[in-house]
Length: 289
Image (cartoon, rainbow, N blue to C red):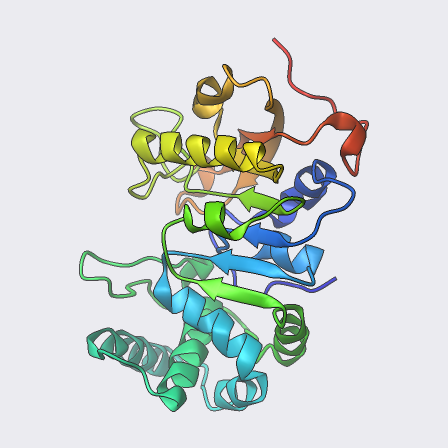
């Protein structure tokens, strides 16, 4: 199994068994339109397909990992573990925002800085201010590993048959074909108007976006594409009128709240059109009223 390189809020490492248990026993190509840290993608290690994210710096990172692993590893070895260097690196990383195009060597440098900051910042959190600048503070780690040589080499091999997109999630309706598998892990709809990081954070992905995602899932189903969607319980109602989908409830631990007392288990849902007899784990119970 290939391990993800980056820490990422909302990652699915703790739910890999539940998520992949609902996948079909076989499929042609694999597509993940909200890849984030890529825990599910790297766990599957697919031969072909696509990944996508609206965070351009993240998709650039995966392209560099895929195409230039040796250069990335060597660049990673140039960083230092100190608070002063961290803020210098953060400033340099944010300076790339003003570059209209990134030359090859700068793409490698930007990717290396992203990994370094991810492994040394507070709580491994990726957060931007209103200007798009990374603004997470220095984290207190004893011996962080930002070189990640073995993971990068394995991830690079895993990405060889995968195309990387930086666009809206609906691209997958055109890319996926009969027999493919699509896993959507979008920003979750908040469970309430006051819900905070210990439950769900929509990050600009509102109910209209959720409806568009539902419509994309319906269209993919009509194209004989297997679909699985992770989300929060409030979106269940969007899928109730479509008999092709079933819903499973699972519990996940969210640990990205700065207040430790507000961290803990929250309910998530997994929505799929894969019929029980075709799933990897046929004993996983579907949600019923």
